[in-house]
Image (cartoon, rainbow, N blue to C red; front, side, top):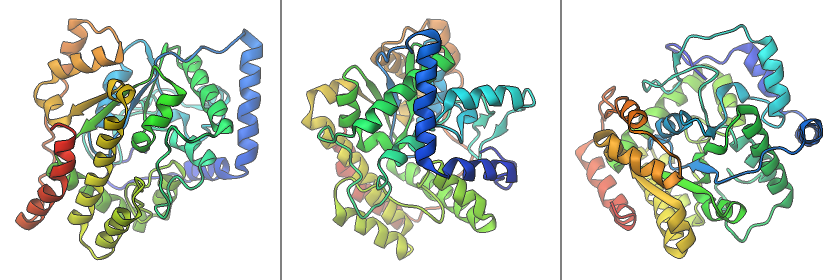
Length: 367
């Protein structure tokens, strides 16, 4: 959702988004029909081989990791252009190719964080599918963890078909997705795809929380100015910021309640610190319980990615099983630097509180 100055959601996009939200059962059936036609027309769709997910809290560096990995010729990922008709990606992209007006100049994305995007840029999109098949996945009153014990055959079949269509559509060998909410679904995904690989970025909590607070303020203001901004975020599966903000419940109602109480009382930094600790504490516990998950997950320090990009990228590509030449790594490394577009406005007491609350989870991750 790129924009200049104010965040813009055009009337045309708002109409399309609303249309895609009508009769979800019909869109699901159309997606199944698309799959049958794609398989029947040219034989079987590509098989899924060692899929890749970048997942962690928003503002942790997941977007830049997605952009870097998406530049590898073997990967295939969602793009901005795939929204809003995620259920039928092949048909929608065919229509988009005919209807679009050609090349679009890059614009800074809505987050105002130096990342320039076009409709061809990689983006997190698959949450729309999860919301369809798991209607309570963003209700903090319930556990939002989807574990290896879960079974949802309808979702699993549709999801696999969708991934195969993205592989065909993009001409890639390895599915790549940025999906921040999958941070509480790692064991479930590993059950579905035993050869999957996960990259979980971890950012130093004080700067991370300052960034989260800044983004929430931005989307809160823009949502009040234009209700279409909030509706767009909700329908695309973004509940991190704005008037509809909802924390992920990592299986602990008490902690989730504490987060929401802090936010309701205006204790933003404390609430985000409790949330940070809850989510990354859940990741650490998940990894600790499973040797298979321990092998599948690569924890990446955002600060180290920025300060030692060459070595960090080399480790990431090795973990993913993607060949990357020295020239390729050097070119990507040259793009990385610490963020310098804002300074945090946290008080000394807020900084102390953040460090105190988050340090156990940070230690459990080995940072």
